[in-house]
Amino acid sequence: MSTRESRQFKTICFAIEGMSSFAVAFYSYYVYFFMRDQFGFSGRDNLAFAALNGLIYTFSAWQGGRFGQRRGYFNALKVGLGVMILALATGWRFNSAAGLVLATGLLNVGACFIWPTIEALVSEGEDAVGLPRMVGTYNVVWAATNALALFGGGTLVEKFGFNAIFVLPIAVFIALLALVFRLQQHAHAARADGHAPASAPAPDPHRPSPAKTRAFLRMAWLANPFAYIAINTFIPMLPTLAAHFRLTPMFAGFACSLWCFVRLGTFIVLWRWTDWHYRFRWLVTAFATLIVSFAAILIVPNLAVLLLAQIFFGAAIGLIYYSSLFYSMDAGKDKGEHGGIHEAAIGVGNFIGPGVGAASLQFLPQYASSGAVAVSVLLLGGLGGLVTIWKTAR
Image (cartoon, rainbow, N blue to C red; front, side, top):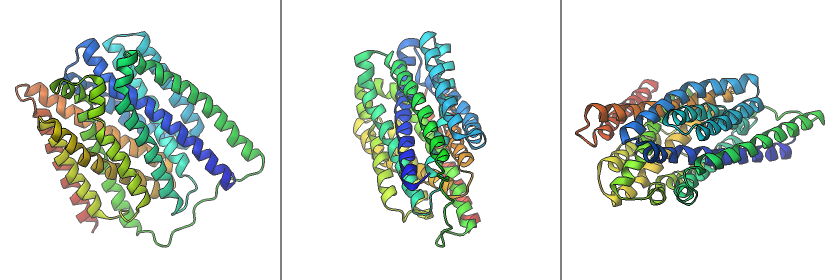
């Protein structure tokens, strides 16, 4: 493709990313309210539900990235969207707790074919200047639509009922499936016209040493699961927090989405300002901030603290996630597989955090904060691992 065609192609990829992100996030955030209201799920039950989804995501993301790398990115997108349509149609048709658990697991499988593929598509063929710009755009797009889904999703649920968490995403995925077929035709036509694929990026003389690059990749792949340990312990507890502060789903979405908008702002800053690249102090500070803010959100029973802590929580999550994706795309040519590993690391966090929280509430039910305390201790262990990798690399 020519440079102009490549930019148009990637713009469409970002559109697919943004619409997918909104649809998946809308369902994933508010299905916990649905499980509470429809089937009586407690905070512990929702944490266990989230842990199961995280386990499914871990293995699916790794395989999804490999599938896209080996079988073609367009095939991966079509499989992912088809699976997600099937998943939500199944959950909507068989309105039972078991049906929803199955549907949500299947939705996670489908999503794992989407994210590594889009990450690879927008990063392919970029040089040392273009890659940070593409990764930054990718992060801003999904973070913006993710924040809108949490902020406005409660309003949609209150206006249209819980059927909205099925109908709206299904409509989005059907439209995107048609768009992917059209995008594939466009790419094939460009090749038929004689346009060669974008050339490989030229080497950057200012890149860090290979040893330093590998060390930061390992640290980012360690830190990102811990960030998602925190996120996916917080999200399933939203209905519990809402009940504690007497918030409807709409106002819970308003109050508990602040961290998403802070994460979006952090992505924009890190996109425009790149001096944080390969700087350990930024990564370790973000990790320490994550631990303190997470504990404050779930342990301190105060609405003002909840709002203030989300500012630091969102900033820390933003830098940790951005580091993982940037170093994954910057560290080699197998971007599909690296994207899959990056997403699989997210799945590990999605499994361990809620799993530890649910186990703590199961065995220490007399302590309402036992899950949050246990996960905070786990995060401290991750901080120790981060420092150990850095010291070993030095």
